[in-house]
Length: 357
Image (cartoon, rainbow, N blue to C red; front, side, top):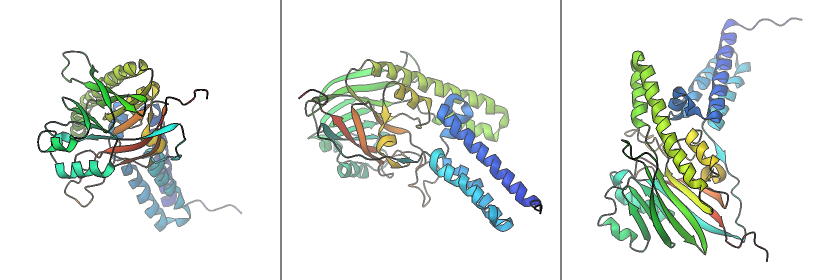
């Protein structure tokens, strides 16, 4: 016998669930294509992606009241958000082979050391990296903190520090923008020796989107200025892409093993990360991390709330070429800087790997 039509409330809630699913599909496709191709996609990249689960939770609760037989439908959207949309990773974390050398790398935008320097250096001691790359150092290495690095090999220029327990050689400052531009951008390059294996290391800090994102927030409150703010964000993305493009060209000229680490100010779904992947790099967290690995955002919305240690975006990266594997990658403490550090246990192919015995 014919079934009775669904009550109006059920049909409405299921229609809203379908629309939410279509929205999530659009976000997923946009992220695959490089979300910052469009200013609204770039804006969404820097939002806490968990907000997209909120309407699904509300729809779930409403369906429990109206027609619980369909309550599972919005839960699929919740799983979609907490999976692909939020960037859930589940690295396999393989064991080392005999021909591979272990290396622990740590990168951290320490934000001039203006928050909690004692916690900052305690975290470095706790993580015990072999190679440490710092950005926005400011005067952090003046006494008494210079003593901390007494037994390290240290290379510093401007905001950058590369410190290592292993031998470092050379030091080059590579410009990533045109001379005379307002936003000077550089990368610090040096060579690291690991048991006879030479690794080229780049310490990078790309342009921040902070002011452009603030302009879009203001434009949402004043819609007449939203288009102008969107254009400003697109220009900000274009500048960061220019910097990443110059870095890509430098990387293509590197014949050996390469590590690039730092504050890229770019989530994994950005065109910036796509450009670096195009240069032959892969991301340490995407390969060896578990969970979300967020490194930023914990101070923006809830600095004075119990959730102040909750980060929601991954813009700090450790990337490397095919001669290095990541077996584990994670983010560290939230209390010492506006950024969390990113730490990775890497395996480097030894110089003899692949040679006939």
